Length: 596
Image (cartoon, rainbow, N blue to C red; front, side):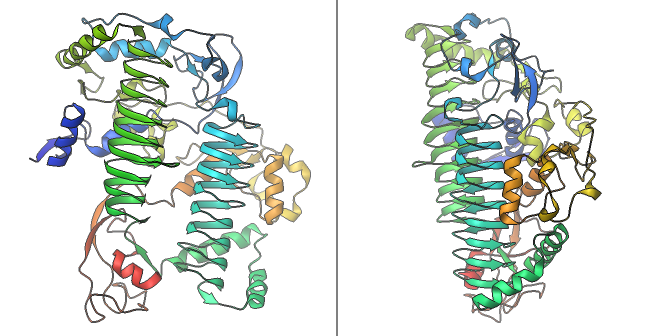
C-alpha cells in the first residue's frame, strides 16, 4: 500500500510507502501529517547546542553561561544541582486534565520544571566551561556535540580528538585545523573528506596519504602537490613557495584548491561499507534510506547525525542526533546511549518506553514528563501505580486526537505529532534548523516559527580587520587583549558576533602550525565550514561519465569502465548534488574505477 499525502506545513505532497506503514504499525503510531523535510526542521528547532548567553539561574540568581537566553520563560538551574537529589521534579507534577489539549498542559509543565543551564556530563568536564552537549572534555573551548576531546577549540561533532581547532565531523584525529569530515588524521589542515592521512594540506577526498598538498581523490600517495608526484626533497622545497604563514598566501591556495578540485569527479554520495542505503555521509549501514551523517545504522529511514561507540541504531524513523545503541526510535531528537522505544522525545539518555518526554534519563514507561530520573509509570511528572498508568495511556492518546492542539498557523497536533515549534525554548535562528535550512527573520515568522532578536553588541573593537597582521610572526602576545572586528561585520545570516577575541591556547596553536590569525568570528567560521558539507536533500541524476571523459570534458578518465570507453554511463542515482551544481558526479562504479 502506498499513499500520497499533503504536508500540513509546506503543502507539498509526500509519499508513505508499504514499508513505512509497516513501521508505524509496529510502533503503534498514526502516519505523519508533515513531510520528511518539515518533520526534520521541526525536530531541529528544539536543538540548540552552539548559542551561549549570560543569564541567572531561576533558583539562586547565580550568573551562568547558558544555552537559554534570558528572555526565555523557561526556568534554568545550574547543571550540577539539576543532576543531583537537591530538588524534586515531582513537585511540579499535576493530574491530567481531559478538558484541555495535551500540548497546552505539557507546555506549561516545560516552563515550570527547571532545565539545566547546559546539556553536558558536567562531572567529566575539566577546564571546559564554555562547552555544551559534551562529555569527557579537557581543556576545551567552544566545543559542542563532542565526546572524549582534549585541548580543542571551536569544534563540533568531534570524538576522540585532541589538539584540533575549527573542525567539524572529525573523529580520532590530532593536530588538525579547518577540517570537515576527517577520520584518523594527523596534522591535516584546510582539508575535507580525508581518512588515515598525515601532513595533508588543502586536500579533498584523500585516503591513506601523507605529505600531500592541494590534492584530490588520492589513495596511498606521498609527496604529491596538486596530484603531481615529487621526491621528498622536491616536495618540501616546493611547499615553501606557497607562503602558508601569510593570510594572503592561504587565501590564494584555498582558491586554487577549489578550482583544481572542480576538475575531478565526485562520488554520488559519501559513504563506505554500506548495503542498500541512500542519503549522504552514511557509513557501515544496511537497509538505511534517506539518511544523513549516520554510522552503523540498520533498518532505518529519515535519520540524521547518528553516531556509535560499539553499537549503532536499528529499526528507527525520523531520529535525529545521536544514537549509541538505540532501537525503535521515532520522531525524537538528541536522545541516545541505550535507548529503546522512544516516541516524540527530546534529550533522554538510558531510557525505554517514553513518549513526549524531555530530559528524563535512566527512566522507563513515562508519558509527558520533564526532568525525571530513574522513574517509572509517570504522567506529567505525577507517579501512578503500574495498572492505573497502563489504563490511562490509551485514554490520553484518544483524548489527544479527540481534542487536538492547534497552533497559531492553524496546524493541528494530534497524537503522533512531535512538539509544536512555537513551544521550543529557542528561536529558529538559534537552532540547527537555521544551520541546515537557513531562513530570514521574515520567512521564519511567516512560517509560524519564533525568532531570537539578539541584543546590539556594540563591542568596543580595538583591532580592525585591515589592521590584523598578515602573518603569525607579526603577532605579539598582547593580541589576546584585543577585540578583533569580524570581516562580516554582522552583515551575514550566520549569527555573526561582529567581533571576537583570540584566547592564549588558540594563539599557541597558530604559532605551532605557523598559521595566520583568522579574520572571521567563530560563528561565521562555523557556518563557512558547514557550507562545505553536502546538504540534506536528494535529487535524481545520471552519472556524469561520458565514456572516455566526463560529460563536461573537464576530466579525462584514466581507466576502462564497465560500460566501455565508447559508451556513456546510464546509471541513475539519488544524490545530494543538485542537477545545477557544477561538480562532476559519477556513480560508484565509475568513481571507483578512477580513484580506488
